[in-house]
Amino acid sequence: MRIIQAVAVAATLAALSGEAVALTREQYCRQYSSFAMNAMRQNQHWQCGYAGRRFTDSRRKQFGWCMSVDQGTAQQQEDYVRKQMEACRPTKR
Image 1 (cartoon, rainbow, N blue to C red):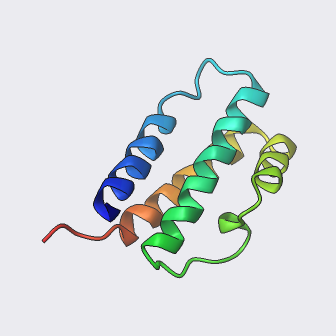
Image 2 (image 1 turned 90 degrees about the vertical axis):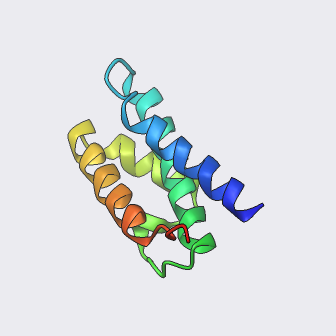
């Protein structure tokens, strides 16, 4: 069951990375906040230990932050968090 959840979350994270091109700012930030919430859940599930504003459990705060910065900054943040989560991802044995 945990493996299925991890795969589902990872697939969602991967799918979100390529979809930002033709979206409105609000649409992008809604996707960003979903991505951030998934990363927060992965962080907890995989016991990565990441903390701080990047891993807040508030979708509203994630969305608000995204709307307050330019999309390039939000994309950089998403890329950074994605790399952290890839580094923490449990390896298959």
